[in-house]
Image (cartoon, rainbow, N blue to C red; front, side):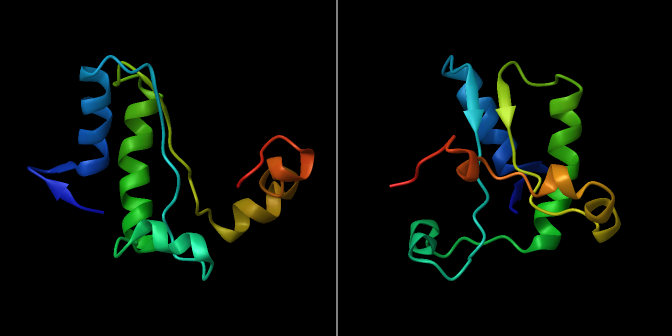
Length: 103
């Protein structure tokens, strides 16, 4: 994940959206998964380690209401022990409930 002037570019995008008057921004993970949709991300693919560092910093700002807009940012990675303790939560997938459709 790229930083400019010690600020993650993803945070700059949030600030840009705020400045445009947007009320909500929803990010999706961009990890290569070996599927055709991978081509949409071009040469961009953060490492899991970089994603966790960025997520930790930005999610704290989201939790502390440091942004003027609603920000949705996927966690993507958790410790194995956390998964084992809360499998029901992490095995939830909206597609299985018919909540999303992807074309």
